[in-house]
Amino acid sequence: MKSVEPEVHLIARPQLDYGEVARYLADVGGQSWLERLDRGELDNELNDPQNLAEFAGRLCYRSWEPGLNPNVTRVRTDQDAYLTNILSSLHGSVLEHVSFSFVLHNVSRVLTHELIRHRPGVAVSQESLRFVRLTDLPFWFPEWAQEDPELMKRATEMLEKMEEFQLWMADHFGLDEEGVPFAVKKHRTSFMRRFAPEGVATGLVWTANVRTLRHTLEARTAPGAEEEIRLLFGKIGEVLKKEAPALFGDYEVTDGAWIPKWRKV
Ligand SMILES: Cc1cc2nc3c(=O)[nH]c(=O)nc-3n(C[C@H](O)[C@H](O)[C@H](O)COP(=O)(O)OP(=O)(O)OC[C@H]3O[C@@H](n4cnc5c(N)ncnc54)[C@H](O)[C@@H]3O)c2cc1C
Image 1: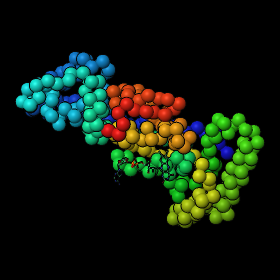
Image 2: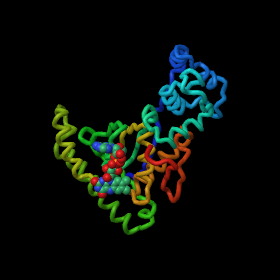
Image 3: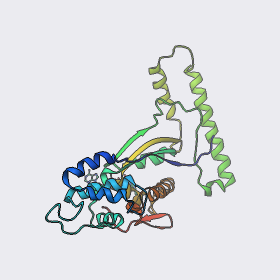
Image 4: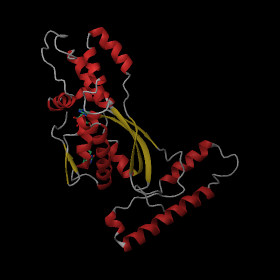
């Protein structure tokens, strides 16, 4: 039995092609917006997730600078203020362009069952325990459980027994013998996984857009949420706050609960 901790790895974020953005802006007369980025007038380094959200928002009203759209006589030039206005006016659809991909590693099937209830704006590729044979049973124990020696002793014994049964079944079914067709391995492996606990640690790639991330961050760190998913989303929130402070800076964290200033954009 391997004791593990749920981990979050951010593996992909948006990247703007500023050359193409410039070509588009030259056509509509909005080059000054890009020049502002070039001059470093934003107090952050080029932040592609934030720039993408701002770009999508400004395209809607052609608000790159005053006058391009005769209806627009003033524009916000500060990105933080611009994106804050997007959040406060609940103009959340522009946030759907900005997606982040995470590897959620060493998370249980308890957690993944709950995670996949969030449907719009997500993509999931989960480790298949039909294909991937369990040779051990990685398992997360919360701190309070680790501090209970009798619980740990009994839990470890049970997990070791289950591991031993996995190995016995693989041997009994002859899965490692020469020439066993993959279809047979898959069939038996799927049977065998039924004897793994729901707490077995596994993993997935989980991609979500910022609109979804804002909603799930709040829902899954709420005091009533399950403790592993709370822990995980706390980590996701920390990553996101660093990656795109203007899109996640309005959250107050109280006893692990991430509470946004602007709910449900
Ligand atoms: C603390 C907690 C406890 C929970 N307990 C249980 C439980 O006991 N049993 C259980 O079954 N589930 C439970 N859930 C799951 C919960 O019911 C939701 O299914 C889950 O949180 C997904 O969130 P969502 O409904 O906001 O949908 P998401 O898929 O995250 O969608 C986001 C938003 O998009 C909109 N939307 C999405 N799909 C549709 C649609 N088809 N039609 C209209 N609007 C849509 C809604 O406004 C929705 O809020 C729990 C969740 C939490 C956070």
